[in-house]
Length: 236
Image 1 (cartoon, rainbow, N blue to C red):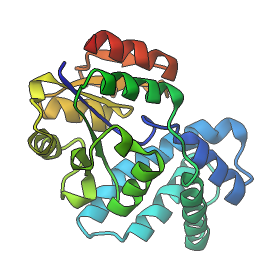
Image 2 (image 1 turned 45 degrees about the vertical axis):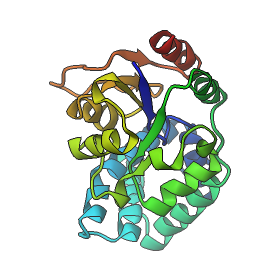
Image 3 (image 1 turned 180 degrees about the vertical axis):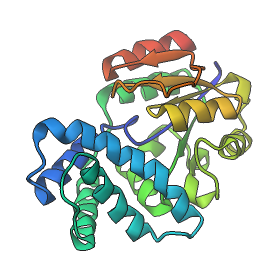
Image 4 (image 1 turned 90 degrees about the horizontal axis):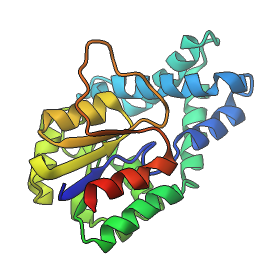
């Protein structure tokens, strides 16, 4: 491997913490033991519905309401009003103002920077929302702005081949020798495969591989503590 590109959400930082804080504030009846499953459903509905925003079929506000309402219903909680859904979104965004890079990820980025390994970012989501996270996490201390791609600004999104092709071109990286690191098997691992990239599945949520899908990643890492040794082994 000669270059490495990262996902952001639930890869660079623990996305479940701001989600948990917002749920506790707005929907206090959600049981603690349901929080992880609710978060997984929330990520599922986010990935499933954002294409409708990209195609102008849905507004961003409606998508954000729908994903939390459907996630709660998936766990047999009552449907919520659109007002409550958008209150949750506002609270969640406020919590995202406090996100911090996981220390093990910082160790990885410092190691790669010291070795002068070119790095990049591909993240799905609304441009302003995702770039705010980039700034909050200070990712530009390690990764040049020109090497950061946010899906809404491109018209493509993971796992589409086009966004990986665009990144390889814009970042001046050779796909065959580029590693993509992300937590979503469908978006990150399948997407990297679509683009002809290698991948590391950062499966710290211990998700199962989808049925009838062959694994294509070089490595699977199941905890933040195991991430640095895995990257070190590929780039030493």
